[in-house]
Each structure stands twice: as structure tokens, then as C-alpha cells.
Length: 472
Image 1 (cartoon, rainbow, N blue to C red):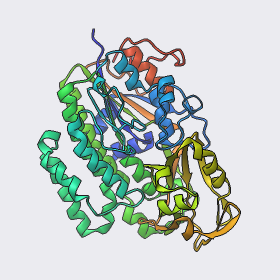
Image 2 (cartoon, rainbow, N blue to C red):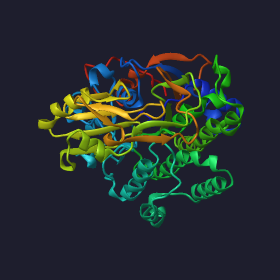
Image 3 (cartoon, one colour):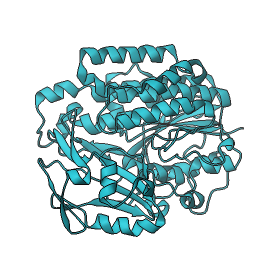
């Protein structure tokens, strides 16, 4: 029998606790139905880095090796050598002639040279340009990247009119649905009534993208496809304490804040449910498909308190100039505040590293990572009124370094952070039925080899054998 095609919904960082929380509140939803009917696995990441991050755990999930092997630790760390030595699952499948589509998966940028080997390919939000396969999707990627850049930490209420107009003009061609536009209209109205609702805009980008993904899925019907969303993870980081105050031994957030943001995770999961419904309807109607929901890792509560502002890089050209770099020396790569990525020529890399080693901000050494000529700098400090800094042994000011204070719009920095434990749910309504409520435990590294085995592809020697998809 032909192997069932797989749709992978990559719902970043959602632990079973949050799935259970939502499904208990909303037992009538598609997500609750799939949660109860699907085969569940508690996953754990085997990454060894001190602070696990999604731009590392997803490459591990996709490549079947941990961070010690693939060495991808930061945003925008794109190296051809890594892709050749430990290719992502979509690359291995495409090489084997398996129809494959990729939609915004973490670390999927840039668009591969062999773009024609893919049913469709929509790189992630850290892509440096709007190139897609097919090229018809570039108008959407242009809008997607513009909105992502504008909301690097706080959600911007402005809309890039030019790119938005292109999307509107191409709505039918892209596959955008009237219900999605109606939903967006409702969101804009709710923002007018309650300005706190602005933060919910994060949930609408993946909702738009899911319409487009579904059209490409129907058009090309690949054997394997991925779709990534981060909107629930963003809500959990900020509002875990509002939804789960009982998780905190010491609770330093006031009751008015809890009241303002107590339903934000539930709202984000509701939008995930809308995406899941679209995909489940497709799978329910086609016996040749199954749906996998994967998270790569999870989140859990951390000590939390009110934080109104923080020091970070607010002027990248000024920061580069302080390091002695001119505009032609550096290629800035997309990242999320307070993280910043850039690449310089090989001849300048040692000099830049030497400078960063001497960078001291308010008495603290700079936090940075180097991979050949690629650099990732993180600047985040909650101490108020910092002005004194030092670079190459000389006293300077934070302003001269391009640093400034940025406001936390929701009055917190982070109330939940990454943990190794994640979730994986296999929904295969036309395959083997669920046989009990036992939740198995697996490594996140088991997924990629299971997919290769499912499609009868030769497994690389560096992967271990796994078969999560048998009988589905």
C-alpha cells in the first residue's frame, strides 16, 4: 500500500499542559477531537547548549542529529556545509523524488538553489529576501517579512501599505479566504475598543499563511509538507503567569495585569484551532493523508515580575560604526530583539571578534557568538539609567554604541521559558486507530528517520533507526 502523505504542523514550543488546558476549556473544538483521537508522544530535545532555543531545536528535529553535530545555534546561521553534511528532512526527501513542500519552517531560509525540486517552498521569517517557489507567493512573503520586522519585540499597529495592497490584489490567486478577512476585520475593531488587543496580531499572520499553504497543498498534493507557526509560543512567553498563576511559588505580578492578559494563551490556541480545523478537514476528506502536530520542545514557568523597559541595540548602523564597520563591510541578517545577527567578510571577522571581546555595557561583558564570519549579538539589560560603556579599552556611552531603552508594551519580559519536553500528536483518521491513552516518550531526533522509513528512503548512517509512523 502507498505510504500516506504527511502534513506537519509545527506549532512551536507548545507543551501538553497547554494542549490539555485548551481542550478542557473547549471540548467541542477540532483540536480537542484530534487531541483525543490522535497518538500522543511526549518528546524531549537532546540539544546540549546551555539555553535551548527554537532556531537550534528545530534543525535537530528536521535533521535527526543534535546541536553538537549540526552546529546551528543562532538566527540566520546559514551554511552550505551544514546542509550538505546534515541535510534537513525536506532536502533528503526531495533528493529521493518524494514530492515535498516547505512553508515557513524554522531555519528553512534561504530558498534552495534546486527550488524546482519542491512542490512549493516558502522560507522562514528570517529570510533576507522575498524569494519563494512558486514566485507567485513572493508578494505574500514581502508582506510577511515587512510585518515581522516591524514587530521584532512589540507589536506595531502600522501596516506596510504597499505590500498589503499587493496581497489584497492577489488574494484570489494566493488562496486567501473571505472568512480570514472577516476575522482580521474583527481583530482591528477589537483593537479600537481595547488597545491591549493589539498584541493579538501575532496570531493573524499564521492564519493568513495557512490559507495560502492550503491552496498550495491542494494544487500540488505533496507527499510531505510542513507549516510553521510561532504565535502560541509568543503568547506563552509573555502571558504564562496570567493563565497559570498557580505555577509560581512567589507571584510578583499584580491582579490587574492578570485580568488584562489572562485569556491571551487561550485566544492564541483558539487561532491554532482554526488552522488545525483547515488541515484536519483536508485530512478527513482524503484517505491518503495524515496530520502530525509537533512542537520540538516546550515551555514552563520562570520567575516573573513587571519590567517596563530594557536596554538593547536601537541603532544598528551606529553599533556597526562603533565596531569600525562601514555599511559595505557588513550584511545584517534578520533576528528578534534583543538578538542581532550579521555577517562580515572573512578578513574582518577576527577584528570584529576582538572588538566584541572588549565590549562592556554597564559593567557586563557583551554576549555574542561567532561562527566563522557570522556573528550573533544579544543585548538585553533591565537595569535603569545605564550610560557608561567601554569598547577596546576606551570609555564611551551607551548612546555612542547605538544602544537605547525599549518599552515592554505588556509590562513583562518573559514569564515562561523553554524546556526540553515537547509534544507530538499523530492524527491519521484513515489509518490505525488509537489504542489506549498511554503517552509514549521519544526523542525529537526520532522524527526525521521515521519519515524516511515511512517513505522507503535510505537512512543516513548518522541517524538512528526509528519508526513512529508505522501502521498510520
